[in-house]
Image (tube, rainbow, N blue to C red; front, side, top):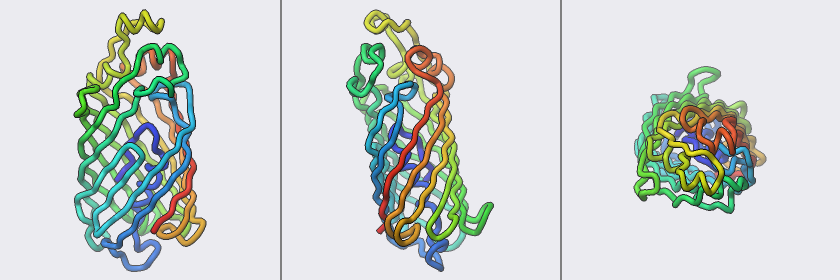
Amino acid sequence: MLPIRTRALLLGSTLTAFSAIPVRAQDGPADPYRNTVTVGVGVAALPDYEGSNDYRITPAPAAIGTIKGYGFVLAGNQLSVDLVKNTPGPVWDVQAGPIAQLNFTRSSTGSIDDLRVRALGKRGMAVELGGYVGLGKTGVLTSAYDTLSVTLGYRHDVSGVHDSGIWSPGITYVTPLSRKAAIGVFASADIVERGYARTYYSVSAAQSAASGLPVYAAHGGLKNWTLGAIASYSLTGDLLHGIKIVGGGTYGRIEGDIARSPLVAIAGARDQWLGTLGLAYTF
């Protein structure tokens, strides 16, 4: 599954992308029903909120796996499952399944350095449920083992915090360089509905008086696009077994009505950076 961008979890995105590397690239004939699980933990540098120009360091846990042909990804605050069973042979990989995510955006003012944004008040933790569809192909460019995937995800808040949805299209390309090393690149975007924009990026008259930021009414649309690169190197074993070091970084750009919000245009920045470095172990 393509990394669907969340606030904290480039490490999870890194592991997710490398889960697409075919078994046969390392171990001979492909076994689509080979059980494999990778767990990882690292540290990530990321903005206090999407659009902030203040950064913090946070743990970034992740896990991915394939059990009897069905895949799953746990990337910190997001869980997804691929309910389309893998099939033998170099065929197209059809992907579809549910997504569940906890959205902690501005749910704690203690994690936000900017006093003006703090004065806007906290938001509740949103519970976002939805699904995704995708299509992947192995052996597309550099070798018989590289993988290109495109996905489209949708999540909707069911907890009443922003009571709206987020569309997330994306594309990922991953290629193994050897039995021990692999690299990948990806691009993604977030398109939000009006409730999301209003909840996280609007400023009411009362909030303006408390914070000094101008009144602003945000509407939905393209929130951001992101470009990223990822890499993995096995310290023991190979890409499909043992300890590996994983890392990567992204550059994102806030767009549209969200970019014009005082939380971004005055208190933050449109340019967004994220990086992570960690260790993972594949069973």
